[in-house]
Every structure is written in structure tokens, then in C-alpha cells.
Image 1 (cartoon, rainbow, N blue to C red):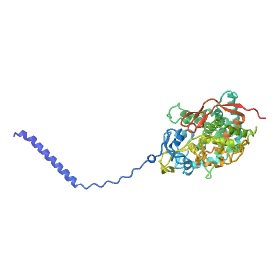
Image 2 (tube, rainbow, N blue to C red; image 1 turned 180 degrees about the vertical axis):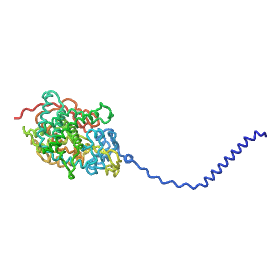
Image 3 (cartoon, helix red, strand yellow; image 1 turned 30 degrees about the vertical axis):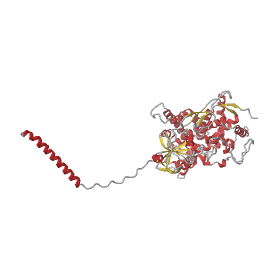
Image 4 (spheres, one colour; image 1 turned 90 degrees about the vertical axis):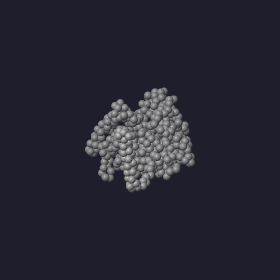
Length: 532
């Protein structure tokens, strides 16, 4: 064999020998290695609160809150108003929606306020103020106590006559625009001007200069409230409703800072004031703490926004009831109840005690509350006790939203029989006579004493219940009193446009809580003949 042929053979043999040696060494090494330790037991999988609810069969709420009540009814047994929890989302927040009186009590009264913080959209906080009563979480008990003390010292009766005068002025303007009944008018315009003027009077008192300065802000204030609904467009855009509202908010603040500074000096010189601003400036708790400057400014903004928007909407809704929902019998009783005063204005205690007027206002607020949900956020992993049919608790994870259903709870048939029906009787005191004497409520009729006071949730409940409830009810009743006393009103042949938090709708005859929150009715107003 030639020498050149033996070289590849030798290389191949060497390679084979090296491979065999590598295999032997690898096997030997593997045999000498210690046995691997047994695998550690794996921890059980931790489920999120959302996954726990999904596995428990908690149903989802529709994409908007409109068909919520119809959705609850469609689910059927065993889901009902005492047991519903729904997975929900709104304004980019995900969590659960709860309804039913026990659940609302848990969220507003029984629950530690530290476990559920407010979850309003951040832009609302920026516009109204982070130190406003409904927006503040840290230090809320201190702020609530100071504000509650301040509100309790306000003498509403001092401004009560102003309410009647203002209502008559605004109604006369809108009636003139309607040519004494020949042209349909939107009474919500009069309600808007009335509520803004009265809330300004309540905030800064009867001081003519301060009142004029506050009332001059009405146009800017409408821009301010219009920006509340803009929570999606980029904040850096100059021509968005939110940007315009921010600029209007700064103008409002400049005016009120000047009023606050002047008021401080006058109080330091010994003057006393019984309005909201005077009470806030002098409120002191048991620890000697007073409201800060920012707390005063933010809560003035809150007074204006909440006192205007919700009360004006409630007045418009009540007018819708008077002209399109109320029975002829109830309307006759209301007219007679008011006519009994002749030209005399009732006192605040008298107008509060009018059974028919009070029942109409409360039933309207039950069916069409200013706010359907409270927006809350869990600050820790929490459990809602006993609110689902097949689970002892419902898990809510830290950071998840909890939407507390006020409107749906006030449609609970266990609390309000025939909840979809407008019923004045449920609020009338048992056996009381109406002013007209046309009927006596039967002894077995639903009576106000039988309505669970906690079930009337139009002003919320618990530590965040609206401190302006008395003022709002008084304003609504005064406006309706003056409207019915001085004008014959009829529904105009125009569609009623309603604006809700989630959708627009066209209303006709029926009240529908699942569709609209604020109604804009059209009516004709005919002045009544002068009273003898």
C-alpha cells in the first residue's frame, strides 16, 4: 500500500479512538455525579380576584349602565336585588358593580373608609380640586367633620326668602319668552339660572358685591361644567372642553380668592356671617384645626358644581313628572296644597311638611337620582361578604373599582313595591289628609314611615353622604311651588331630550332610569289669574 494512502486511514482511526475515549469519559463522569435532589413542591397557583369571580360564575355587566336593570331582571333566579354582583368597567376602570341595600350599606356605612377610596376620574379631581370633600381620601374624616360643623351652622332660613324671589324672577323670564303659553319653553333654562343664583347666595351670602361677582361667573361656570364630561381627549390639546374648563376654573378661583381674602379681613374686624363661606372660615375642630386655604377653595368649587348641576337636573326631572307622568288626581292635590297659601310664602318648615310636594320630589329622585353609581377603588384585597348566590364572599383585588349601585337599589321590589311605577302614596304619611281634602290615604297604603330611610339613596349614605341634602330639597320644592302656584303648565308636543352619564336618549311619556339621568322637557306656561 502506498504511504500516501495510509495517512487518511490513520487520521480516521485516531478520530474514532478519540470519540470512543470521549464517550467512555462522559459515561464515567455521569456515573460519578451525585443523584439530583428531588424537585421542590410547586406552590399552588394564586388566582386573581377577577379569575376567582369568573370561576364563581359572576356575570358581566353590559358595556354601559343603561340596560343594567333589564340585565338584572333577565338573569332571573337566583340573582336578585339582594344578591347581585357583576363584573363591570367604566371610564377605563375595571372591577365589580354591586347593588342591593345590604351591599350599599357595606360599601358606605359598615366598611372602613380606608378600604374603599374614591375613584372619580383624575380629570374630575383636577377640575374640582383634590381637597374637595367628595374627592379627598387622606384625612377625609377630619375634613368631613369640619365641613359638617360648618354646614350645620348655616341658617338656611336667612336665605329662604331669596329662593322664592329668585324662582319668581326666573320663571317670569321664561314665561315671557314663551309668550304666555303660545310658544313652548324649556324650563330647565330657568332652573339652571335659579340654582346657580341660589347656590351662590348660599356660598357667599347676601353681600351685594360678592353675590354680583359670583353670579357674573355663570357663563364661565357653564364652560367649567361642560368640561367634566371630557375625560378622553388629550389634555395637551388647547381647544378641548377639558382645556376650556381648566381655564374657566382658574378664573372662578381668582374671583373667589379675592372674596375669601376680603371676608377674612372683615371677620378679623369682628363681623359675623351666617353663609357657607363665613362658616368655613371660622370652623374649628376639637383639636383646634381649621380648614386650609385650598380646602376652602376646592369645596367652594364643589358647592357650585354639585349644588348647580344636580339640583337643576332634579327640578327639570320633576317638571317632566308634573307634565307627563303624574296622575290627574295627584296633580289636583298638589295644586290645592299650594293654593291654600294664597299669596303668602310658606316658611321653610311649612314647605318641608307639605306631603304631596314632598312625595313628588322624593319619588322623582328615587326614579331619577342625580348619580346612578358611586365610584370607589379597593386599597387592599378585600372580600364583599355574602353577596352572591353560590359563594360566601366575592373577592375584589387591590386597585380594582367598586361601582356602588344607588339607582338600581332604589328599584329593588323588596324595598319599593312595584318599583317601576311612579307612586306618590309610598311617601305619604299613613292616614294623612291632603290639603284639598279630596281623599284620605287608606290605612294600608304604603306610608313614609314604612320606607326604610336608608333606602332613599339619592344623596348617598354613610361618611360621604351629601351635606347639602337639606338645601337641595328646599330649592327643588321652592321652585316647583312657585311654578305650580303661578302658572298652568302643560307638556309641549316636542320630544324630551335626556342626557345620561352613558348615552343620549329620546324620552316621551315614561320615566326610564336605564336611559336618562337629566331630562330636558318642553312645556307651555300660562300665567294663572291673579288671586283675590
